[in-house]
Length: 179
Image (cartoon, rainbow, N blue to C red; front, side, top):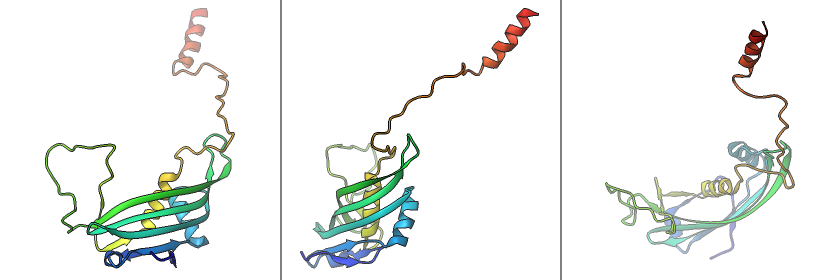
């Protein structure tokens, strides 16, 4: 397969192109696109994002595999400080068209899941593979949902007073007993 070619963001590849030896793309969104993606993912910023994605034939669909390298700025859940975090991740997913004979068929009854088995292929709505969508999805999966700045330690505050929904009633009761 050829060296990845720089491709504009967002990127879609026609499934039929994959059958002819595969497709390699390199995605590197510009600053404005990274700003929009950061907002979509709830990040302070995406300082850098590049992905090399390879689409190769798989059954009558495609295997989409890639490498994502990014630097993101998140907000620490403990200190509320912003901090930068590097991401270096690989992903792989299989896709097939909805009319493929390999597409999972809807069956009634119970659903049997094997946690050790490969994920089922994604069913495409048309004949286009949303490459940038898979990059964004797998970048999101790499983000810590509870980001913590390195070295940040949560220390619970010292209780200053009894916190109870009945604490106000206690003061009334004490006043009533004295009088």
